Image (cartoon, rainbow, N blue to C red; front, side, top):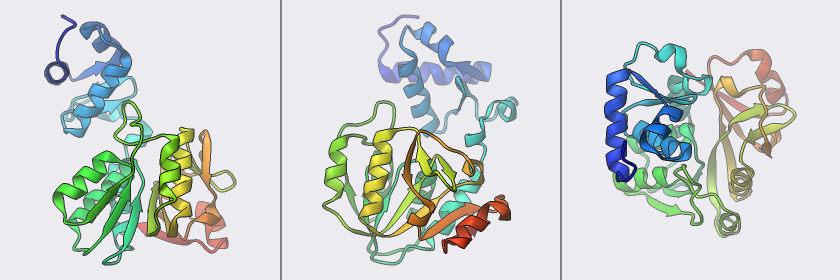
Length: 259
């Protein structure tokens, strides 16, 4: 394959390939198009957001592929749970609130449900570019985007400068996502810079609302950004065990079960 294709040409050809063979790997696409694995992962992320495929570990599959159930990793099997969590989170938004929205698939689902709601006069603060564009194009809410260096391959800003910028704002509520939650280690994420941004959003908010699906409970990842005591509301799907919620209840955290 020639290596001078424009980005959109390459992405169109990837979409054609996956229609023909059900699934593709980053490695084979990288060799086929003579580009880096990072470039291919960015292409697959774009195509997933366009609804043309679903990314899996090491590649992607066609959305209607029969192998889907075998290839979807744990953190991509819970879209229904995330949607339920997002719907529950929207009930905590009041008209004319100023709210901060974190990044991640759960926050993206939250933004989708917020657009569908009848909330009025909202002001949105976010560092997620995709969420910002979606809300600003489909509502009349005021949307403040935090500026800085875009993290390669991701639709959000992630740099040290953003932390200082966040201090200039104050919001009624912050809606935060997490990669993992452990009762002792707290909420955590693999990226240190992202963890620092999350900490800053927590610091400027009057009410902190954490959204977490059950697959992330009793897990840890690299950088902790909050402790259980830092949240006013903990929203989780109905598959969570009562045993795992008891320590949170003992701390006085208000737990909302999304069903």
